[in-house]
Length: 98
Image 1 (cartoon, rainbow, N blue to C red):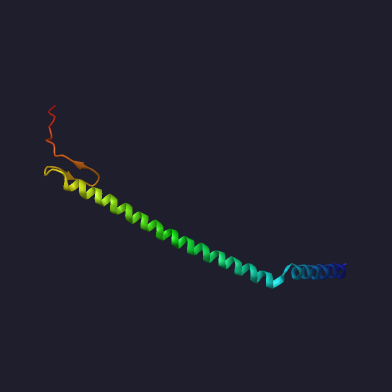
Image 2 (cartoon, one colour):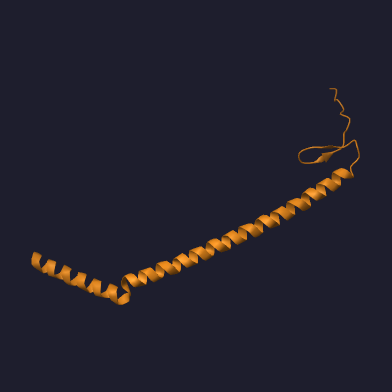
């Protein structure tokens, strides 16, 4: 019984080796690896290009926003003060007496 299992395993191994070589074997694996490497390199190049374009767009947007802020500050009266988020006019505080 054990000898029959061994013979079947050897026959299955031979069939697997023949199928592997018929499909392409190591040469096919090398071709697939090279193709995937080229795809990876092109994706890396595209990502770098996209990153550069995005950085340029953000730089231009920043320049426009900062330019608009500088124009607003140049035209603002002396009494106004700039806070972190808004520009406020000074107001007199009233104390509530209860």
